[in-house]
Length: 419
Ligand SMILES: *Cc1c(COP(=O)(O)O)cnc(C)c1O
Image 1 (cartoon, protein in one colour):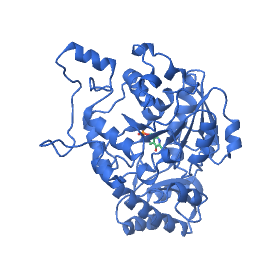
Image 2: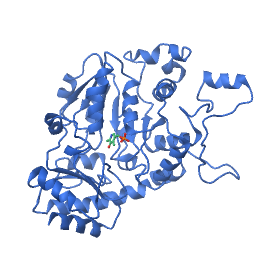
Image 3: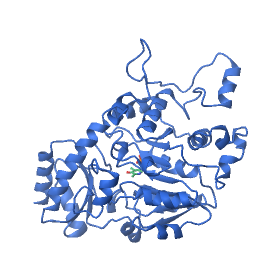
């Protein structure tokens, strides 16, 4: 099936006489006729649902749909994008290990990587997104367990050259993890370019309506965890009656381990109602992405020609530094997010934002309604000046997320605010 069809039909197949829409299983638990049957599910949790801390039938349908859209083999939802980032790493790295990440990533991920993971004993090394293969290779240590990057970086809108980083990762027998939040599988499927694990903050375009925070981790099923670097996959898990993930679940050991071990212990799993709402967003995602890209390009062109704007980052513009990479990885468009630098720095940027009438000032992005944010005073507020510069953020930078309003109304609002 093509993406438009998958958005509507993947994951849930109505039975004869059954509900046409995926039902909400809002139940913590599931009943069995015998103790033996419950024991059997404990032995092999892929057999049935037992408890909604780590699986739920409604969420399961959404997971299958997202895995299908991303060309993955399995997926696991989480209660936030942050939880997905955390679990995607903890599933393969533990105390004493390292991760290599590009420095241009979401501010919350920078904090997680540089502060919190350090307390877990995991060191994250940061590298410039534009580094060449030799420079990337030099940063890989014997205990480096994965490379991490964002397809379209938040908020600097740089493009992660997935194939380049995948080549280095695979030469070193480690997986590439890609945060595909801004692109969504409609605009880019990182697994097709060599990514092994894909994560999302579903809070953004997937949910699409600014209704609920959520995340997902997708396993390509392609990485060979028996390569010698990942003993947690090839030796018995004592906390799960000796399961050897790579041997007992050879098709998708990564997601099975994330669910049976980490989700069991952390319990950040969405409810049936949450799965239902996320699915509503997914059903129209392909239509919305098309319009975001169209409105985004029109607005970026307006900014580009405005005398009060110093620069625009939008890889869909022919003049953008990342235009060629965008043509390769996101040929259908580069989403509705852009960042603009207002002449005059921070004061002028804030003044401009406060004059907007239609566009809302809020801590969100990829909302159905046009919204703006000043990263240096909000999402990236906790970063040092050096970290800000590494993330591609200057004091006059405003992140603009174009919505689905009529583009003439959107442009008119920005025109009057700039005036
Ligand atoms: C928002 C965001 C996150 C964090 O997701 P939450 O759902 O807010 O926890 C991670 N990565 C990117 C690229 C994001 O935009």
